[in-house]
Image 1 (cartoon, helix red, strand yellow):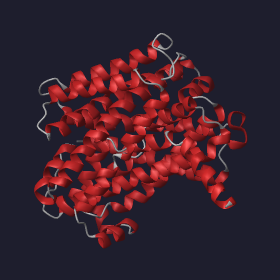
Image 2: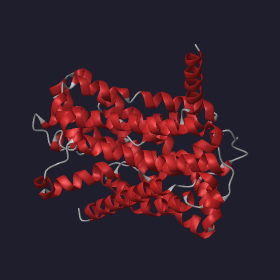
Image 3: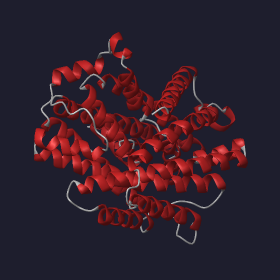
Image 4: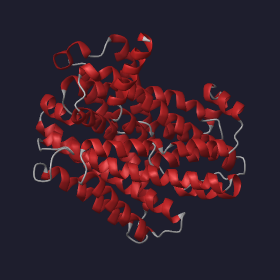
Length: 416
């Protein structure tokens, strides 16, 4: 009986802390991520599933550091950068982050437009309606209500797991390829190397670190609740990459097997699934894409508003009114309106813009990772919660690998 009560307390304790880590990790599967995973499955079948293990480990390590900093210091990442490295450096990073995130917001509204066109809804109706929904949901709600909506949106990613099952994959082959490293000949294929870099490099983006830490601070998580928050981060990272695994699997089992090798936008994957895997798989994939794009279109402007206001010393947070935090709400509104407006421009090169947003992410990531690791190793700031030797080795190694892959991806993208 005592054991049962102990577990009950632990579960309730975890559910109370659930949110920031789970939400942030799942937004990683946005329109750009879905496109990358779908292309990996369509082009190379199950052979890129081995990347899911290092992806998960990298995500856990980096997100855990941000969560720990937020719980220990009670401050957001941009706030800490300003205090430790000065306002001028912070202003430069904030400017770059706004540019990068604006490209990401455009990519998400592109995903919304594409997913709704699959249901024969014009982008001129879908995008403004989605933008209005996102704006009202965040501006008119407080942190707790918005977090509940975001948690529900995270659960909707289960649609991809169901779609994967409906695709009737070769489970044995999928499992083997997940734990088996590719042979040497695979690395001679330039496109295979490029896709490998893309799959791993899409995992960690600059905005995620700022949003996670800000969310933990606003939720009021402290060192006392940190064990539950760390579990939140770990479960979120594992769940999001299980979803990514199923996206690769369903596209490998259907598109790859039937010779469909090229996907230009995420909606192409859903459209191609219909005649192969049936209407249910199509509906689940299309609905998942809409959910992912709408989810990320909510989070990305919110993350940007949090980050910029913290970094430059303005009031921020969903628990504050418009009068209390005008810069926060105006910046959030401006990003949504401008991002949606760009997508509505006739013949605008949306695919090129989506690719550019990934390139900009890759350029900014090394800078953010450097500041994160400097801060987490500051013993005056972190006290006993600074990185230990072995965690530092893992963290710096992860930072080096992810940064290196991102820079290679940038170089490859710039070369066309």
